[in-house]
Image: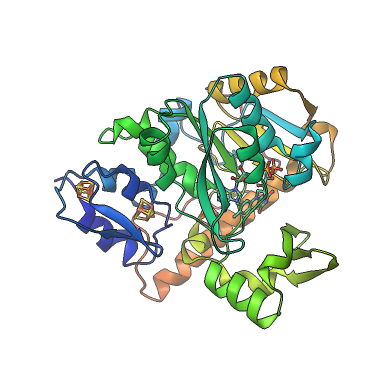
Length: 381
Ligand SMILES: Cc1cc2nc3c(=O)[nH]c(=O)nc-3n(C[C@H](O)[C@H](O)[C@H](O)COP(=O)(O)OP(=O)(O)OC[C@H]3O[C@@H](n4cnc5c(N)ncnc54)[C@H](O)[C@@H]3O)c2cc1C
Ligand code: SF4
Ligand code: SF4
Ligand code: SF4
C-alpha cells in the first residue's frame, strides 16, 4: 500500500527524526503542505498520492541509494564512501576567498559552472531575516553565490527554493549544495520511482558538505550565544569549528571559543543518530578536515562530479593539489567518519535500551568500523 503524508507524520515528524529539509513540502504536486516553523504541515486535503513519503530521506536506509548512483554497494572499509579523487583545493578569485568558509571550493565551482552555462541556478543556504538563521536561496549569479558563502551551523528548509527555481526562475539545470542529510533528500527526489519529476529532473549536480553536527538555532544561537554569552549574533562575522572548539569571530572584538564537547547537547536530535560524515551520496563532497587551513578538501565521487570539477577548473581556475600532498591528509577524515558512525550506533543502542522509537531506516546495527586506513575506492561510477 502507498504510504502518504499521514505515515510521514507518524514515522518521522512526531518521532523527532524530521530534518526540516522541506523536500516533502516542495514535492507535493497538489501543494497541500507548508513548513510551519520546522514542521511540514498539511494545509489542505491530502490526495494520498504518496510522493512526499517517497522523497523523505528519513524513511529509508540511504545505503539503498548507493547502487543507483554508483552501480554497487559500499564495502565496510570504505568509510569515506565511494570516491575517485581526493584533492585539496583553493579558489583563486580573491572575492570568493574573502567570503568563503575554507578554500572557497564550493562557491568557486558553482560560480564557474554558472558563468560557463553548465547550470542555470544553484540552491544554496543564505541568511534570513534573523542573523545567522539559515535561509535557502536560488543563486543565479556569481554575486548571489558569494553572498551565500560561509557555513551556517544550523539547518534550513533547503528544498523550498527548488520549487521556486523551477516555477519562478524557470531553471532547468540546478546544482544543490547541502549537508549529507540534504543530499540524501535530493537523491530521493532525483531517483525515487514515485517522485515529482518536474523537480527531480532539474537537479543536475549534488555538492555535499562534510558534517559532524548542526546546532539548534533557537536554543544554541539565540539562547546560548546571544543570551547567555551576551554576544549579539549581528556582531558575528564567522562561526567555525576547529580542533575541538566552536569558534565565534566578532567584528573588531576578540574571538570567543566554546569547547565542542560542552555544546554538543544543542545538536538537533536527528544529528545524534546520523552516520554520514562526508556526504557519501554527493557527486562532489567538500569539507575543511584533511586540508591545511584556508583550503578545502574535495572528494570527487561520480562521472558527473568529475565533469563538473574539470569544467570549473578549466573555466576560472582553482589551485588543486592531491590530498596525499598535504597535511593532515585523508587519514583524519577516515578517523572522524568512523567516530561519527560509532557515535550514531551508540546513540541508537542507548535509545533502544530506553525503549524510545528508533528511526524507520535503522533495521540492524551497521558493522563496527575498523581502525585502518580509509581505502581508495576503485569504482568508476
Ligand atoms: C552544519 C554544517 C556542519 C559542518 N561540519 C563540518 C565538519 O564537521 N567538518 C568539515 O570538514 N566540514 C564541515 N562542514 C563544511 C565546512 O564548514 C564548509 O562548508 C566546507 O569546507 C566548504 O567550504 P568552502 O570554503 O569550499 O565553502 P564556501 O565557498 O564558503 O560555500 C559554502 C556553501 O555551504 C552552503 N551552506 C552553508 N551553510 C549551510 C547549511 N546550514 N546547510 C546547507 N548548506 C549550507 C552555502 O550555501 C555555500 O554554498 C560543515 C558544514 C555545515 C553546513
Ligand atoms: S504529496 Fe501526495 S500524499 Fe503527500 S501531502 Fe501531497 S497529496 Fe498528500
Ligand atoms: S522530507 Fe524532510 S521535512 Fe519532510 S518529513 Fe522528511 S525529513 Fe522532514
Ligand atoms: S549531522 Fe547528519 S542530520 Fe545533522 S545536519 Fe549533519 S548530515 Fe544532517
